[in-house]
Structure formats: structure tokens, C-alpha cells
Image (tube, rainbow, N blue to C red; front, side, top):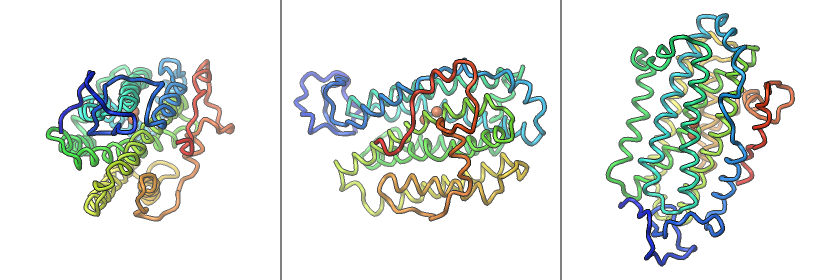
Length: 339
Ligand SMILES: [Fe+2]
Ligand SMILES: [Fe+2]
């Protein structure tokens, strides 16, 4: 498949003929005339979610960090290090591997906003790392010394690599699923780990930062789920039994990887997290993601730690994380039903 033509004045493509990929649009980002209205809704939500990492108060975290147990410290460092990798990867992956093949200008706009947000997440990790450590390289370089971290990063990067290069229709659909999995599964053990610290009253600035990040990730997840669902309508012939088998295998592998990562970072030392709970949580998330794109759930398990969702929500009045003027930037919301 060819990369899209960026400026395409000879295009005769009608709005109705516009395609998520494989189309021939004129390339104009025209927010007054779009086919995919969900893209406009997402854009508006992303815009309302705008936030600035520097404005999250981290001074208390700098003190808290010194008093974390060795197990908590290890977990915190590993989580940050892994998140740093994923947002770095995703910033580039979106622009270099996905966007060149997406032929709906309104979706290109959302992808470019998403790519900026992933870089903004990298900025937030820098704020966190700088506030807790004088030697920032220790966390940034952990992948060089921690074999398990290196393995997780390498596996995820390999999946992306295999889905880039020579692209065909099936490959691009699989790449959409790979992104759905990254946005919807691979961040979640790490997020829950930071929330677990927050729940016990530690590292509240970090929790707040992660909530902002997670709110962005929800829109990223919706972006890919909406792309998948639109392609399912446009190109139903691509959604074969073989594709479903492959997608389920990708999900099972991702659940295995994320659950084992969750066990590795917590090592049975973090209150409220057993290996079984972590695994069930990731399985539960995988089921929701599968259902969101029209597939039956794989695991059929209940949410084992519903407090995480309440904790991650900006609407939860019981938690009190708003400090300084951060509250000014929390006007966006996340609601899966809106799309
Ligand atoms: Fe991100
Ligand atoms: Fe993301």
C-alpha cells in the first residue's frame, strides 16, 4: 500500500467515499466538512483535556520518595522507566507508521494531536524523575540493566516493527489492533501501581500526573477503537475468521506480558495487589477492549479492583488531589458512551 498523498488537488473523492485507509482524499483538514463525526468529538475532548505537566505539584513527592520502602521505590522506578519507553515509541510510531496510511484528514488531525500528547507524557515523566532524583539517568537507563524491562520493551517494539515496512490491508488492520492493545492494556499495570501508592497516601503528585495521562490515553484508545469500527463497516471482508484468531492471539499474548510485568514490579510486596488480582484486572480490561470492537470477551472475569477506576476518575470527590491551579485544566471529561 502506498503512503497517502499529502496534497492531492486532483482528488474527486466525495465525503461519502472517504476511507480510514486506502482512500484518495484531497488532503485538506476541513473541520467544517467531515465524514467521521466521532473524530470531531474526540478532537474537542482532547482539546478540553489540555494540561501542563509543570503545573502538577511534585514537592511532597520529592519528600515521600525518600521514605518509600525499597519495594515501593523499585516499583516506582520500574513503572516510570517502562512508561517512558512506551510514550517515546508511540510518539514516533503514530507519525511514522500509522498516519502515512490514514486517508481521512480529520483522523490525521486526531493522530497528530495524539502524537503531541504522547510527547507531553514524556515531558511529565521528566518532571517526575527530576523531582525525585538527582541522577535522572538511573531511571532513564534502567532498560539497559533490567532484563525483564528490556524484554517487555523489545517485544512491544517488535510487534510494531513487524507491522510497519511493506504494508497491506490486513497489516494495517492488525496495526490498528496493536495500537488498541498498547493504549488499552500495556499502560495499565503501571498506572494501577502508582495509584496503589497514592491510595496509601504516598506520591500524590505522581498519582495526579498519571490521572492526567490516563485521561489522555482513554481518548487514544477511543481513537483506535473508532478507526477499527469504521473500517469494519467500510471493509467487512477484511474481518475474517483468521483475523479474529490473530487478534485474539495478540490479546492473549499482551495479557500474559502485562500480567507478568505487573507481578514483576509489585513482587507481592504492594498492599492490595496479588499476582492473581493483577492478572484478573488485565484480563478484565482485555475483555472490555474486545467488546468495544465487536468481538466476544475472551476471559469473562469481573473487575477485581474497582477502586482503581474511581481513583483514576476526575469526578471522584472523595479524593483530593487538586493542588495549585491544576484544577483549572481538568475541565475535560472521559466518557466512553459519548462516542
Ligand atoms: Fe501516552
Ligand atoms: Fe497514548
